Image (cartoon, rainbow, N blue to C red; front, side, top):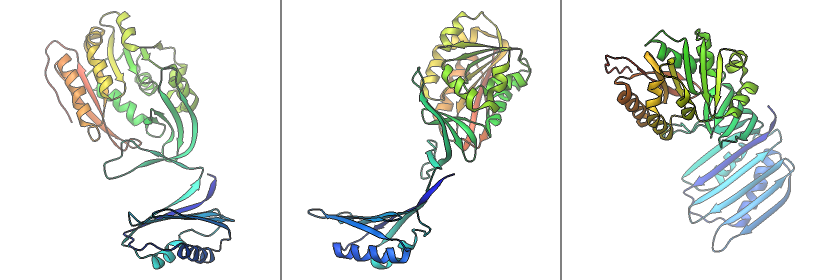
Length: 355
């Protein structure tokens, strides 16, 4: 990590007084003395009919004031690359400014970044701590791909700003995905995987002695990125001669597959409604290529975060096969329980739901 400096922002709320420009100049010199920083220059501007901005250029960086009298808000920020913590300004400003409430944010400015977790619980904002961005590009099929080195989870793949897999806990995801199918049927000689560009599900199948794996994947650039940056996840897949890869639209490719070929089908697509509808439209072909007694398993998202989409996936499988089994496990990098839905192709159908 390369540390650049420290930064604090302080927002005073419920301020009724419109302080003069001279007041702010007096305060910045008081803060500079306490923080032991040198002011090189000061620039300010008074707006009409109200509002004031002041910026002080320091040897060690800067601090500034921005006022919003119509909202009763005074905003202050202090960034320093020196040895003094900018929080020394807080005590001074609390005493100088009459206010009802203060909101403070302090953070290090460094090569460590924060990346939004789009699954943050309402009322809570969560971030991934990013040590480095290893690769970033938009693939030819239009997916925005980022591979990052996360402080807690190691190398991780994001597609369209959503985490897909992380080195540290990928085995939790892929092993439970496979287990969800295996618990319904031990037969797994011939396997089809729809999606799963990181290769984790394919590796899990290899580790559980699947001999023939047909992998239908839309985006070869994602697979290549995972080969480069997530070898712990997919190096066995790259080396295996048991895997045949079909590039492009999976649902077009499976139309050419013979009937009753697979013991297992794993559907590892996005958990959004578009992919649910896509699977529904192509369920006839998925059933056709699955053997009697075979199992189809889909990752269906999180009951914690997207319960409606999980329910929609289960309805699609239940309608097509007459049965569905829902399982789940906690994925630390997703920070939620993740669910897998399985259906078995059999003559005597029964409806099964497990939580």
